[in-house]
Length: 156
Image 1 (cartoon, helix red, strand yellow):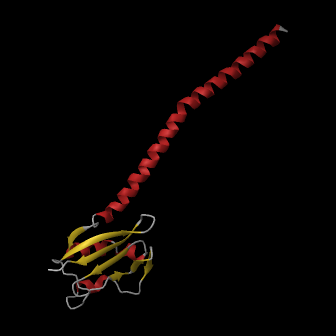
Image 2: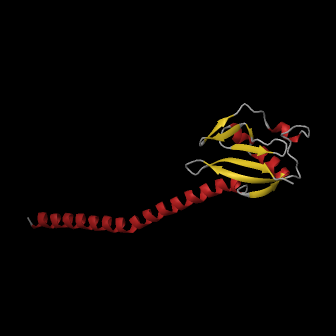
C-alpha cells in the first residue's frame, strides 16, 4: 500500500509542478504578447504613413508645371482604378479638369474625360505650362483617407 501512496504522491507532485510551470510560462509570455501587439499597431501606423507620403509631398505646396505633369503620369493608373482623383485648373481652363476620376461627395468616381494627352498640347485649355507655378492640395474623405490631389495654377 505504501507503493500506491508513493505513486499517488509522485503523480500529484507532477501535476502541481506542471501547473506551476504553466503559470510561469503564462507570466513570462503574456507581456511579450502585449509587446508584440503594440509593435504590430506601431508598424501598421508607420506603414499607413509611408503609403500616404507619396501624396503628402503635394499637400499645400507650390509646384512647377513639370511636377504637375509628372504627378499626373505617376498616379494615372491609380486614377483609372478610382483609387485617387487628379484635378488641374490652368490659367486658360478656369474650372477643375478631372483626369479619369473625380472626387465629389466623399467618393471617387469615374469621369468620361480623356486622359492626360491634352496637357502637352499648347493650343488646348488643358495645357500645363512646365514652367508655370501651381498650388497643390491634398483632399481626404470622411475616414481621413487621401482621395484627391488638386493643382491650381497661380496667377502671374
